[in-house]
Length: 549
Image (cartoon, rainbow, N blue to C red; front, side, top):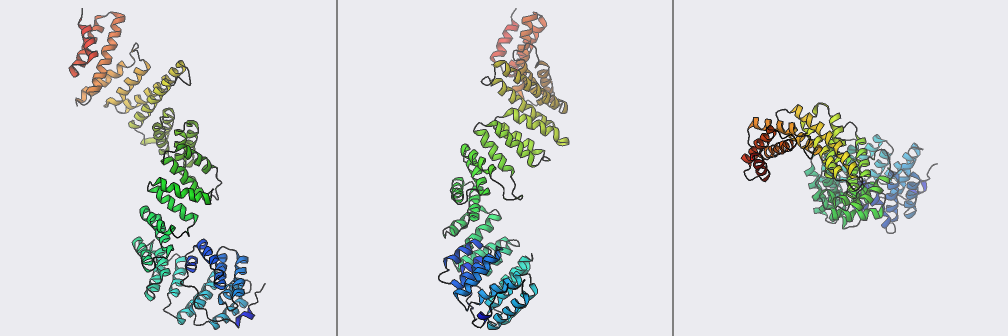
């Protein structure tokens, strides 16, 4: 369907005040469509033609052509002399009736051939329809009309930026500033491309905008966003604080501001912003994530679990939205802290599903479980790590596995609330045997280190706490042998422990056999204890016993 513009063309006059100093126009040019829409809706009564044209441009960028058409028509209804409204309607006609639309644009240009604003609007109409060559022609016409207009260079810079030519775009924005040192839009545009060339130049340009116009609030937003993206969170917070004073901020702004506060460990401040954001958009994915993180870091684990329940129940808008490692960690740790260990383990396992090839994740989860005193689970995950780690698994890894099994054994032995004492003991024995196996591997791989032998001695003592079977004896003997071979004098405490065990073991043997050899060993090892610790009470008692007739 053609748009009948002929009746309007004879009424066209130059309207060079295209609100090029309007905050709303700048919002639109900078891609801040929500802010632009809010601004022009506010000024609709004062400037209906201009506001409706811009609202049409916003609708066009959002892909709402029917809505755009309505706004352009309202622009003309508000002011029959509105060249902008007519340009908007012609733009919509360029694809369906290129000749008719071009004829209309030529007529508009004829009436406004010295008006850079109108010429650039025509160029934009062509560009929006993918007609770059025509757009460049109109850009040249604008240059002929007034080569000193900064908006010509901004327009060209925008074209180059969209073509992923930041260096060339930056040159055009610099040229705009050269012709108008106070053109804040040129600084804003320049900062965007310089961010990827020289961050300091970008921030300096934004600070220059604020210097030129301290009330130009969107500059604070841009400065905050640049600082946020580059990880300069304190700078981002300072800029967001200024920007938020104006009240024209979006949910995305709240999200970034809250994240900056979170990343600088300002958890209470982050929580306040998160609450504001969720009051406006309860199902915002990122804000719900931050809510869980923040509550967890504030150690409000019940609130973190509640936030996590909601976060993981939210539908994901598209396939690009993914759960992060930290999502599962924060949720799992909070579940563990509130006593829901089983559900916490479920989350840790989901963490593994994120990247099954990442063997190190098993080690990380084991460490987390151990910190939460979930030793059986820690051992389970660490065992999987040793199984999948291949050549990088060394003796130290088996040593750590053994420690996890040992702690699991102690925890199982103490758990007489959920199971009977007999069941608790049986479970602990199971873990101690697994620990012994892990420490045996340490001994095999590091025969010159006492660590594996010593831990085997301690583990076997747990399996034979009365020392009746002497399960720990060969391992304490080997511990002594390795330590003495090195003669470094740094393991006195361990030697005392080993000698004390052996002295007591032979005491028990003598009590059963009455063999002089066993009694002699009681005295031998008691003497060794007293050599290292003359005041050792057990050593004295055993020595006195063995010295008696």
